[in-house]
Image (cartoon, rainbow, N blue to C red; front, side, top):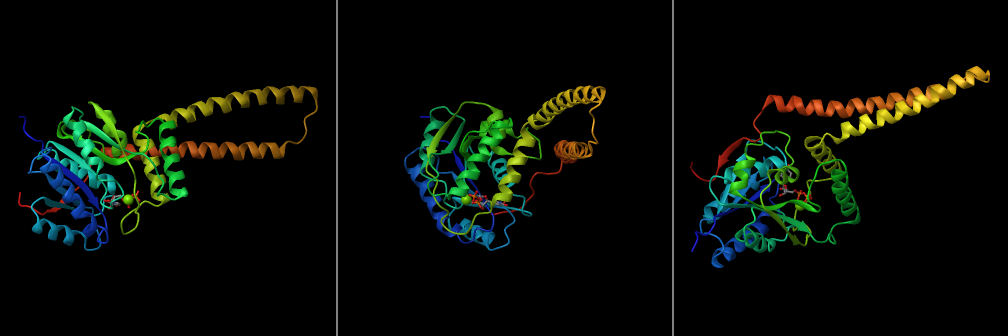
Length: 318
Ligand code: UDP
Ligand code: MG
């Protein structure tokens, strides 16, 4: 019989003292179930990544690690955001396990989907995307904004799996390749598909948060969408070029029309049309410069090559 794979469940936690004591035992039960079903090794672990929480989250993680050897934790030196927290966990895991599953700590993603994920891995898939089958428990507003998010990203050239967030299984083999993607602007959903390898999806129902509140208000979601687009695709720049060509063509027709009007002698003081055109064009130019500036900003950040995460503490000795 082949060796059973070691699974590390990677869980980012930011100010989650309200929900962690509820969900941690649920993750442990799932891990124990998978171990007793002979699907994964007993050396599997639940890795909490404390993302610089300001509440007692890290103390709770340390306490859990003392209680049960399956719980372990790392602490980021400060809050770096969800994506970097997951990345830190995955990079920590890749040399210690065979498979990772990343999942939020709030119980929103159905942990029972892990069974199917592990089965898919055992069937030969290296990446298994958790895809939400319904969003019935989300408010209409959250559902609408989230769906627009995926549509906008795809329309802008960032290919992401529809209705897939950051609940996924990735094998250590894929993570070792992914480690050479050195960019600091990371958007895991868009990057993991770029690594390739055999992948599949598993559907699951998305629940309501068990406790605590969301860290993703509309403003953060918009900035994640914008980050996603600008770090994965140059389509906005192309759209601007296309728009520029269109405006230039229209202006050309207007010029001909103006010349003919002038020749026919029926020109009138065109102050209003003039100012509106100038105003409109200034607006278009400013937006375009802004979008280009966004890319330059990204280049600026990339050239610094700052570390993407800094781990300040671990619950185990290295
Ligand atoms: N999270 C994090 N760092 C942050 C914000 C959030 O590690 O700066 C974690 C959070 O603890 C949770 C996950 O990312 O496990 C998703 O966050 P949340 O549930 O607030 O987002 P939502 O599900 O509402 O989109
Ligand atoms: Mg959540």
